[in-house]
Image (tube, rainbow, N blue to C red):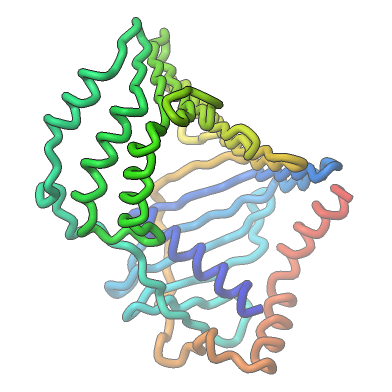
Length: 320
């Protein structure tokens, strides 16, 4: 149960960071398909998730509602107060809280402070690249030189999960072994937009080998189609088509022995929403929940969200 609460809080945080004041994000008619040797489709057509973001008494506020063809199934409120997320589930007697995780911030990052000679980098690419109509071929030697110049300049920048010293060592090893990645970049204008592609080919000891990455994109006024393929690993793709304020989204991934797909309709609008002002002082920290409190919360949630649970389990039964 603690994990469920933590996931909900994380979703709240993501939404708060992505949306602006008094904005309502809607995700409607989701359909999820998973193929692990046998295809299973969970059709949640009729379900709508509304996420409203605004402000109450100077604090960021969130309202989440699940609807079934316009009728409310369940909802919750959240506030961000003093670096804590306070959350109140509809029909649950207590309010809960969790500390906000430290998120990377680039607000104070000054690009001009980096010691990067952009003119030299552009010259490196331009002098070594081959231009053939709408295709640009950048050899691995130029890619290595650009990386070699960029990595030291970025050493003062903290990137979570990335050790730039290790990246620098890898670049040095690539140059020493006459290895790297060739890039072929294509671009073409269409009647309604443009299309582009990137193909990365592995080079070892000066000899070009296998393609290690292919990316393709076609962008138009009301549609987008993007595919990212890594041979022997998998393919990620998404398509969108907009109609008025709505965007039909289709997102999928395929890999060895499995595939998954999500589709739905996404929209964003401004709307008058009444946000709850939550009591942070009396909220229970989810990290301090006892087994009894966790069980009590689970029972209350099961009862309060019975409509939503019933809708989801109905879709699961239909998919079985």
